[in-house]
Image (cartoon, rainbow, N blue to C red; front, side, top):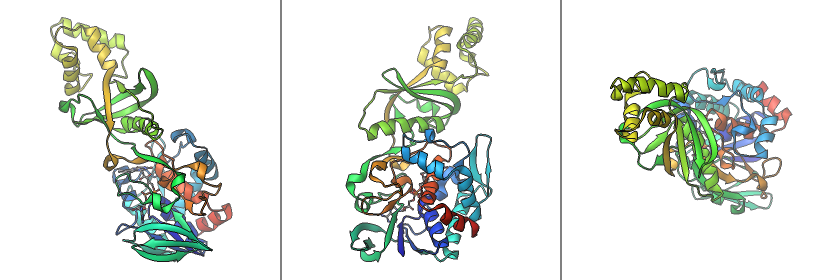
Length: 390
Ligand SMILES: Cc1cc2nc3c(=O)[nH]c(=O)nc-3n(C[C@H](O)[C@H](O)[C@H](O)COP(=O)(O)OP(=O)(O)OC[C@H]3O[C@@H](n4cnc5c(N)ncnc54)[C@H](O)[C@@H]3O)c2cc1C
């Protein structure tokens, strides 16, 4: 059976490797000059390839995620990685990385498996159309019509990449709007003096005082606003609301001294300010730049109570999400309501990975889902065959 996989990312390569090992005649069409361009950028080049603590709650509400995770638990996924020569370790928070600590090495392993088991790779091959014809598909690759018996769409999304032609590759009725997710945010009145500063904080996102979510971890201040894992994860909430065309008056509230109670902080500040040391009030507690920011915001005559309160409730009003070029994931895509149990669209095309309306938070969940969705469409016997060959 002549099978075309559109897209040589984590989802497409995983599908292609398992299919080849089961004797399918597989061609991967990748528009870039090499496969795995995005995969090679992941985890700051280290590739956070999965997470031991994965649950459906780490993704947007999706019954599909639950089914995929049940069918392809972490151990099953690691068996696949091992069979491709990718061995892993987990950090103390359950984030899984390749032993090589190298995302490009992961790409090499997958590409090697593909060629070893007879998969064909077409690079610089842009697919612009898939049409169902009797008995198969007519696919346009670089303007040429080619025929395949089976088509798998694993074209990912626009995050840090060009548009995918998803609308031409699958019936447009199956698509929900796509918006950038896991993306830094622009805030109103950003303070450029904080640019580049990283702080540990507890951050709450609210809309008109209704709390939408909270995260604890690193915040990175930028001259335009906020970034860092906490903010990226909270941006996913806004992105999912954008998909539903829900607007909001969003505000980020940070506790930048999460390890001290407000009254203890106030007591410390009170003693220091009483001694006439206003400028040094946050010494040993906050980075000087952030301390200066807080003192500026409360103004010269304000009380220690206000200073302590602001450090525990530092607010930034949301302006907008940054664009695709800064995003790590996509909210929206092919909706699960248009997919059969085996991830097939009404025209029989299989859809995988980030092209689907599934997005996870930071921590290895997105690569996991991309690969797991590909493993999911094979029978347990087919997976066993693939895992036994390396
Ligand atoms: C900077 C960055 C860092 C990230 N870090 C992590 C991380 O550490 N851990 C994690 O879990 N997730 C991470 N992600 C998210 C993760 O990379 C994606 O979720 C994952 O790569 C999706 O895999 P995919 O195969 O579905 O899509 P993609 O990786 O996007 O692959 C799709 C492929 O299809 C090709 N393509 C698209 N359209 C066409 C077409 N019409 N014809 C031919 N080819 C086409 C594309 O060129 C691409 O190579 C990161 C994302 C970014 C941008």
